[in-house]
Amino acid sequence: MGDVLIYGNKLLRRKATAVAAVTDEVRRLAHSMLKTMYDSDGLGLAAAQIGRPEALCVIDIPPMRDEETGEPTHENQDVRMPLVLINPVITERDGHQVGSEGCLSFPGVFVSIKRAESVAVSFLNMENEPQVVRATGLLSRAIQHELDHLDGVLLVDRMSTVQKVAVAGKLKKLRKGA
Image 1: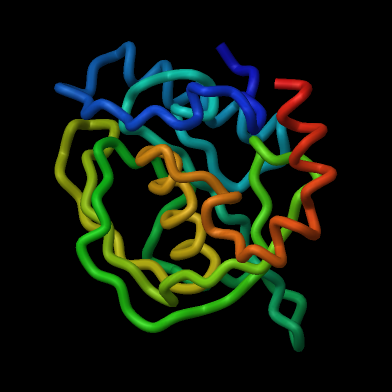
Image 2: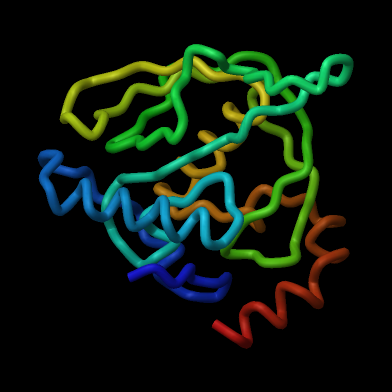
């Protein structure tokens, strides 16, 4: 376990299966996914990206630096990182934002993607307790990106035709290597 699947691998298109109960095995999977995500310098990772069918993703958004003071600041201060989302469902979306996105399954590819500015997501935590998190900005973007993976939706599916043409060479190389 631990290798991130690259675009072209058919397992990336598989829809996730709900986790029946948060067991020690599920917790070990989440910890392993966090390690893989950190080792790959990612902000998020879905189980599908390592070939697993579980509806599980992990996210860790580092603090930003305040432009004036240089002090660490969190956009979503009430959300503790890392975030482990088991059986996540977005229940609310509001506004929109456009920003550059990359993906561990698309190394070297970065494109501007339109997403909701804020979301509410319900999920189970590692203690099998139902939770709801409200997120804005980068965390909102990361949640939407990782939940796309759980539905078999990839970064390429969110690209415009012009963006696909612009990165066609990179996509072709990734598919060949998969």
